[in-house]
Structure formats: structure tokens, C-alpha cells
Length: 333
Image (tube, rainbow, N blue to C red; front, side, top):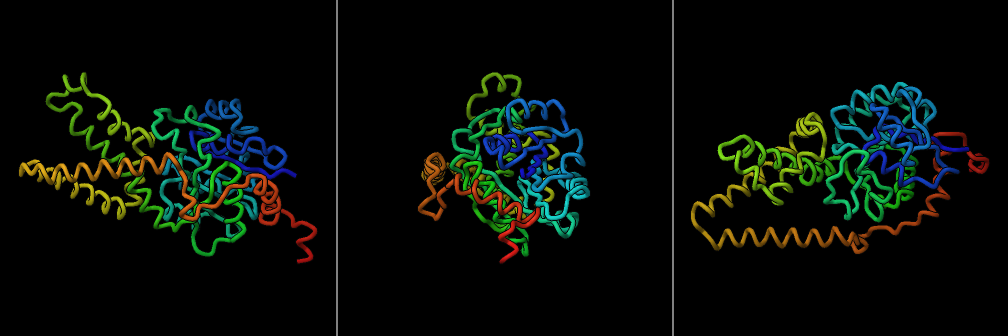
């Protein structure tokens, strides 16, 4: 008996998750759905899914696990549609960059016999500077030897947590359990605010006095900082992320503004020593982070070793015990 995993949203993350689970055909049936039929067909052709569905009801009706990987501004509406078709015992997972609010929606919308698990995938270091987007940026090793955070509301069934951890290990990543609110704060600082900063730079320069000539000479530094605005796709997604996570956004933005003001004051006061000290501290911090991120060795911090074979042998039983019929030996327990 195969377990059905339905992936809704076949961009970089959704398709990479499917690709990472390739080779598990005896265990999993991967069904894909995307609002763009062309994207769905492309995902099937590259092997991210085994088959595609034409609509949400047919995509989720037999699913044991549903992974939603769509922009956050579409998440609540899609969750409402998905919830109507979920079978008893199914587990809904998402990859949105905001967790407390999606967990709140799940509590409101999901059938009582279903569970919600929030995932936060971390891209492998070799893809950090890639300018590819969407399904063209999907890779089977996008999460290899990395981390995928698991965040759930209180009272989540432990079998749903185990199921999520097993699936993560099958992709080649390690699970990292994190609090919903903590993850929202971390993602604000490392994911959302950098994009807001890119928007600020663009709004301060594009079509402003001097831009006609500046656009001709803008180079790598400008491209790297301004490019962050492209990572989340349409502006609606970043707008929703900012508004749904206002407290964290305002807190981190205030810190960034204070830091910019310190640099500005150093320049105004012609305080070369302070300015150099701040810039050097920033340079060293970035260099240290980049080296650690490239190595990706968090073993000293308790990162568990990955055993894909062990995960593959146990996930089938976990899925059946959670969403399907119990095994014979379960009746004796």
C-alpha cells in the first residue's frame, strides 16, 4: 500500500521537496497541483511528482499528507479549500515563512481529526546566491545535509511530528524543532527584512535624480542588495508577510534603522574610527556566518545524523498508524 503525498504549489520549494523524495516509489505516491497547469506538467516531467491533479478536491481527497508550498497571501484561502477535502487522519504541512498565523488558520479551518505541522525549509549553501526562481530553481539536493524546521501548535499529535521528521530525513535534511513565535522572529530578521531593505534602496534610487546615469554603472553591490526583493515573487506575498507579522517586522526594522542612523551619524560627525569599527565588525560577522553556513556542520550544536534507510523503513508504519488502518501488531499493544 502506497501513501499519498500531495504537494500544492510546485515552485522551487514544492518541486524540490518532491525531487528529494524521488526513489521512494514503493512507499510514496507523489501527487502535484499548481494553479498554473504548465508548471504542474513541468514538475511531472522533471520527476518532482508522479502525477498531477486538475483541481484541489481531486488532489487531496485520498491524501495522507498534504504539503502546501504557496505564497502566504494565498495561504488562508487555499487552506480553507483543502480542509474541505481532507480525509480523517490526514496531516497538513506548509512551508510559509510565517508560522503562528498559519497555525491559527489551521486551528480554525482544519477538521478536528486532522493535524497541522509547519515546516521551514533551509536552502543548501550551494544555492544561496542562485538567481534562479520558481520551478527552474528546483533541485533534488536543495535541502541536502541541511535543516528543515518543524513548528507546531501545542497539543499536536506526536505521531504527526514523527511523520514530519521522517519525511524531512528522506529529503536528506535533518529536522529542527522550533517554537512558532521564535521561528517567526528568526524568519523576519533573515528573510523578510532583507527584502524590505532591498525595496528601500530601490525606492531611494530608481527614477530619482541621477538615476538615468546611475542605472548604467550600478554593479554587483547594487544587484545583490536590490535583488532580495525578487525572492518572494509578487509584492502581495511580502506585503501579507509584513502585515501578518507586524510586531516582529517593526522590531527588526527599528533595529536596522537604528544601525543605519549610527552609521549616518559617524559619517556626519566625521568619526572615522567609529565608522571603521562598525564596518569591520559587520564584515567579520558576515564572513564568520558565511563560513559556518557553507560548512553546514552543526553537529557540535546537537544536530542529529541522517539515516535515510532508517527513515524509509519506519515512515511507512508511522503513516499507517496515523492516517490509515493499524497494523496487526498495533492491535496487540
